[in-house]
Amino acid sequence: VIGSDPISVARLRIQWLGLAVGMTLLVVLAALFLTEWPQRKLLPLDGIYAVFPAGPRVVDHGGRIGGIGPNQIGGALALLAPLGLALALDETGSGRSGRSLAAATVALAITVLLLTQSRSAWVGALLGLTLVGWWRVGRTAWLRRPLGRTVLHVALGLGLALLVAVITSTWLAPLDSTSDTLTGRLRIWTTSVLLIGEYLYTGVVPGQFPLVLKAAFPDVGATVAPHIPHAHNFVLQALLDLGLPGSVLLGLLIALALRGLILTARDSKDSSFQLLAVGLAGSLLAFFVYGLTDTIAPGARGGLPFWLVLGLALASGRLPRETQVTE
Image (cartoon, rainbow, N blue to C red; front, side, top):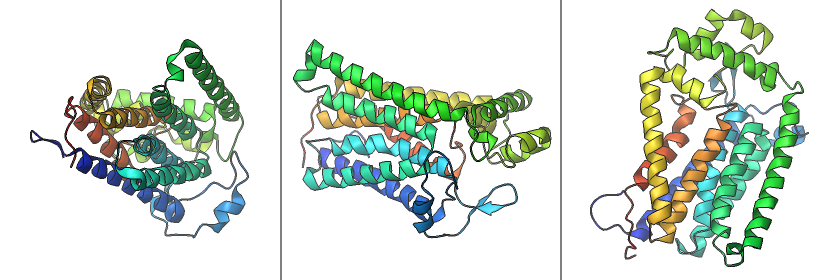
């Protein structure tokens, strides 16, 4: 997409919009047809879940074939929503129809995200969307004044504190299984660290964590959950999937991506490129916050949205710093 030739800004905007909308719609379709929704969790949504079609079961849950976990759907949507919001707010972008399409996609993503009842995804999405909104709204005239900035920061702080307080309180109460509580997650993290020490350089390879965990710590399945698909932490899961060498390389890719995003947001003369960089930064922020207490394994099929966003973030470092002529 990005090379040494002059870049068509209009063409890039269409490509960004197509990638964001297409990937989000794929995740939403997976949510509607392939997800195994919770029977009870934070909100009484059983009536809504009953309306969704019972699609094919494609995931092996330790001998039981079921649907995709809603937390996985939530993580993917939390990752994609900030990028979509940035495209929807780009007033110099692909016209009113493009912005409307992006806005409708974001609204759909947030709706399905709420249905997943994934607390980790909720907090991550809130922070990622807030970053994009803060960048866009913060550029208006009244928010450049001290009073306006103070009002914005206080409102954001109170809203975030309220959401975190409500969500954190649910971590202390048992839900469908103890893996959904803080105590259960601590047990999973502890055993994951022990496995990392055992397989530091090679990892347990992608997809093998449940089997290795069950063989090494059979008591975890009895006390936490019958099937634990991943380490419920992005860093731990990366070390388990890729080993230390692979995780270091992944960390370098992420660092290079963040550097490119910062440079583009700071130095680009094109507001579309700046907003795209902030949207991608918001997406990565949302995913990594989600990855503190849950995760989509880097080597899993569901990790495709993460690699897409990371690739776009890496490419953002090659975006021109000067304004280009649009077609």
